[in-house]
Image 1: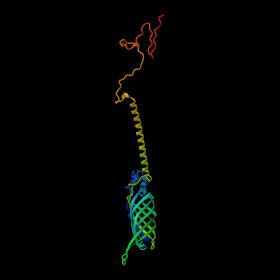
Image 2: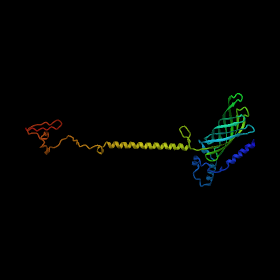
Image 3: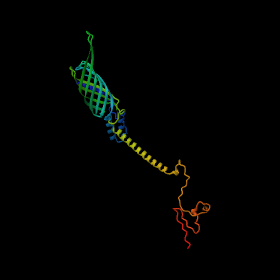
Image 4: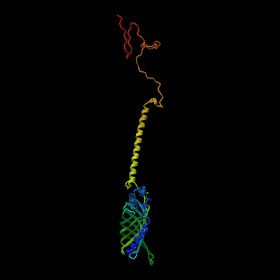
Amino acid sequence: MQGCHLLFWIGLLAVAAPGCFSSKWAMDHEDYRNKYERPYSDNDGKKWNRMARQMVDARHVANDSGFYIGGAGSNFRQNPAGGAEVGVTNYTRPWLSTKLALAGQVNSGAADAFVGVNTAVHVSTPTRVAPFIGAGLFGGVDVATAIDSLTNEETTSTKFLGAVYPEAGVHVWLNGRTRLSASASYWMTTSNHDREFWYYGLGLTFGFGPEGRSTESGELIRENEFVNRLLDEREQRETSAISLTSGLVDGANDKHEQSRPDEEPDQEPSNEVLETEGFRSPSTFDDISPNSPLLLPPPPNSRALPPQGLPVYVEPPND
C-alpha cells in the first residue's frame, strides 16, 4: 500500500518538474500577463524577488472555469474498481475550487457498473504547485436487464450506489490555463460488499481564462473591470452634460435671433412708416392744401376753437 502511494507521488513530480522554475509560465493567461508583463527593475534584489513571486503565484485563476477530464482506479486487491469522468471545474477564490462531473464506474465490489454524478470541493494553496484537501460525493445508478432462459421472460433491476469520500492530492499548473491534478480518496459506499476502498485519480483541467467570464448584474467582477465600468459611466455623464449645456446655449441664441426681425431672412421688411401725432409749424405746402383749415391763421376779428386735443387760440380783444 505505501509503496503504491510513493510511486504515485514520484510519477506526479516527474510529470510536473519540467518548466516549474520559469517566471513566465502563465503569460498565456490575460490576467497574469497584465499583472507581470511590465519590465523588471534594474535593481537585482527587486528583480529576483519579483521572479520568485511569479514562479509560484497562481492567484490569477479566481472566478475562472475550465473543462475537466480524468480517470481513477482502486486498489484491485481490496476492491477492483475503475472509472472515468468529464465535467467542469470552477475557482470561486484562488484557493477554493469545485468540481462537477458526469462519472462512470465499474465496481466489482458492488458487482455492477454505475453512471452518475461526482462532485467535490478542494481547498488548496494559491500557488503553481498546490497541495489540496477536500471532500466529495458520488451518486450512481445501474440498470440491468436479465432474460430467463427457461421462461424467456425479461426482468429489469435497478441498483443505486452512493459514496462519500475525503480526498487529498496536488494540483500542478503546467501553464496559466492548464492544470494537472492527482488525488487519493477513501470511498465509503452504500454497497453491501467491500464498502470502503482507496480510489486514485488523475485528471487534466484546461481552458481556464477570462474569455467568456460573465459580468452580469449580481455576479462577481474583477476590480479592474469595475473601475473601467465606473470610468465609462462618468465619461458618459460628462458627455451628456456637455451636450445638454450646448443645446441650451444654442436654443437661447436661436430665440434671441428670432426676436430681431431685421435680421430674419424669411421675414420681408415692412414698408409702413408709423408716425406720431404732434404739432408742426405752417409751411408753404399748407397754402395748397385747403383741406387743412386747422393750420391756417384765424380770420381777423374772430375767435376760433380748435378741435379737442389741440391748444386753444384766442384772439386778444381790441378794446
